[in-house]
Image (tube, rainbow over all chains, first blue to last red; front, side, top):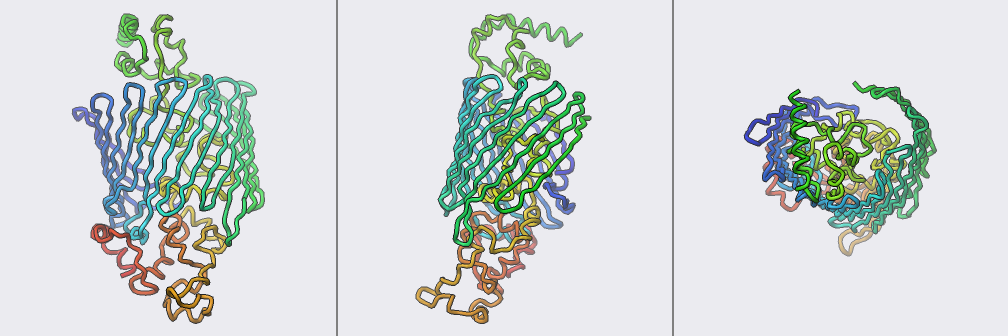
Length: 284
Length: 275
């Protein structure tokens, strides 16, 4: 949203937020006729339970396009178990359009376990013909185990069960190792395997490594490769796509750095192409 | 001066009470004792990770304290934090701005090339993997709110408008209607030629031979993907209008409970497209 947000906190423990402005999605065409207005009230109970209730209207010209109510809850039990949830109620469609509930067990500094359940429906503008169509529910279960191997080095493995109302469910497994830059080196390696009985199996990996050459210069090299199963004209094929790149960052001072990257993108569907980019970052 | 005294008193309180604080480490207690002090007091600038180095603890605590206390892991900033921070950030249960500037958010939450979501060097959690032109249908068909949280449907149609419909992977767009029979025991559609289509399907899209009964399942599975190429839904109305085509009812089962709200909200504008 491009607009104005007003926050007021002197309400006996309650925080009130009012907001309004134009809807901004990440696209070149900015529709100034979209108007969003809403409010949020937030309060903490028993020091640890944070509750937020929000209301939003989106207008498309003179018509009310969307009317949504949101509720979020956050609770950390004894610095042991973090429980969080958010829900979205689509008033015009009279349905819960989004619900997320998650937990993270983080008692140990060496490992953690996160679980999530997601329920989601699309939200269409009441002015769109799509708002009157029947849609299926999408649900997802997610489990992730993370282990800290050393300061800045962690391994993780996760599993997602994508559940469709009338189609076969899909399973997605992912495992990886990430090195956060605490010294000279940083990088990651991840393997992904998706099994979908309705097609669109995917096998892929991501690999990246970077090092500081001097205290002002960092360079990296990476590759992402995916093999996607696709069905076309009742046949199936396996389409391989890849992205390979090298990048570098020159740091002049804490506020200014210069970055450059050259990448090669290729797939079985299209010819390879190259893309280069130079970016000067200035932090004000 | 006032801050120095406050800090000194705080240090004294911490030192006096530290022995009572045997395991486990309590972050909330530290927040109370250091009330008013910036997070950077412990989470020092240029720290290697969000977890303070233990030498920071020794600024206030004796070495013995470190041996007695146990630390829990962080509830935030896990390996897939870039994908999972939404709930915590929206709930404002932690103050992101105490460590981050808005430019950190804009590293991902902005328009640009797919590989630019996250760090310039390609964020590990970037959902736009490899050549995303190829693999994006998977993401598009999972959580129906995933793509639309950042992109307008017009973003999709910019590319999809250039596709030949028969080259799309969806079964709904394949030419497979010819084996369908007319009714339970009637002849197969292959027996008819295109000039006869309008006899049974007036003003429908079916004569284009690019649509099958399989489209209903795909459309219900993720209607947003339909909108990506058919933003106005004109192609749907060809068959689903109450005034022409097949007159096929597209409404959900509980439509009678919803239609009043939808009609009032759109001033009947959407209804008039078909009725």
